[in-house]
Length: 389
Image 1 (cartoon, rainbow, N blue to C red):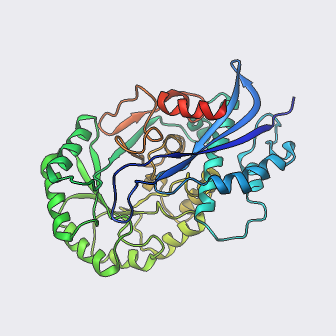
Image 2 (image 1 turned 90 degrees about the vertical axis):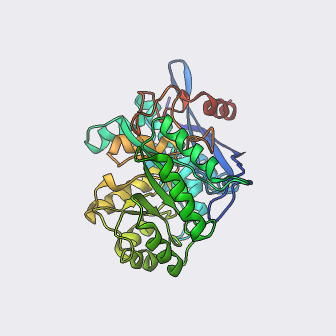
Image 3 (image 1 turned 180 degrees about the vertical axis):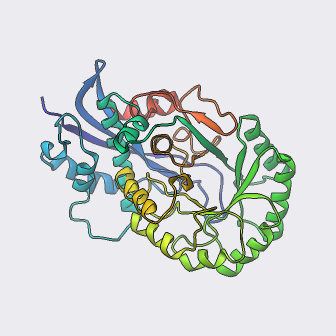
């Protein structure tokens, strides 16, 4: 019987939390959870691929149900298969979703497509009987490395959260095996943020490095003022100082901040990523790129972004994706990225690792689970299974 997609299902789930960064609070945040149901069986069970969108962007149920899922379901099933006819072809599914879509207009559309794309790749790897990271490595002719660098992202502004609570949070990340941690800045005055940074550095006491994230809050004048303040500290990076599309601001900032900077999580296409490389003054010897496939049209598009970086002389090791999800972990392990973000305490159950995975010296080892490995995370798979059944 020919392989086919039987259904594409979506449910919008809350991932609300009483936290805020410099720009938004997360009290109303949602995510789309998607199941791509196939007619394939493996080990007596129907193969279902799962996906969801990263935190920071709302669920895209309307776009998924009204535009992108119907295009898949209306397509000739044979038009979605690879050359062997024995598996789905993610690029053909992606092209089908993008039928009648004009160039540009990235944003929520890219999130909807990226969510379905994640589920399709999960199904493809399961049909192949392989972990996604090993499937990707084989397709690209590289050696997979299941040991991945991760850092702990936190340090949000909570109601009533003082320096003591912030220090306690960062100490907990050290206790859980992280050697790089991240905190938010830009949500208070520069003097208050300097105090918070010094409190965290005192708690870390040289046992871990600190990154800071402004979430695109600053204009150029404020970004430079922060750069002058931050450069006195031994930071891992200074992240997303200004609007993600203000490449001139990013380029100008390099004159005032010689240490590593990071950005890219809010660029949702390979064209936007290319403009950052062309015009953003990013330095391939020290800066970091944070493009998130789950927000930027998925892995099909992310591979185009990676090819662009290679053509521009960038190492894929300079990529540490935003989002803290297992999809990017698989990409990092399969294609040799520099690592992945991790959210130990927030946005659960969607972030994190398969159960039993330990962080040691900021390294995690991916288990050999078919697909993306969601089945290995009990709290997350419970919600996924409910959607599929």
